[in-house]
Length: 68
Image (cartoon, rainbow, N blue to C red):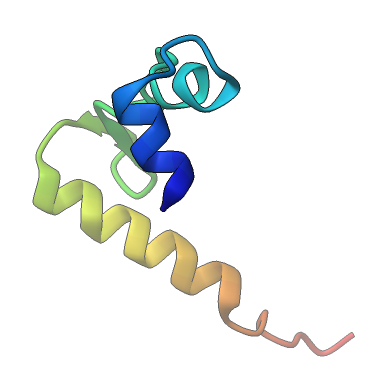
């Protein structure tokens, strides 16, 4: 608290000031996904959520067993 008050009143070029006022890059934005079933790119947000949900579900499910 003392540091924050001193920062607000007196100090302008401290490590705290630079860390709070550093310009940060935005994270990557996913504009579209390719539907693996149809092999078509989609930008529809609901369809993109469905594709991601199915993909993560398939990653977390147990692979099917075969006879060999």
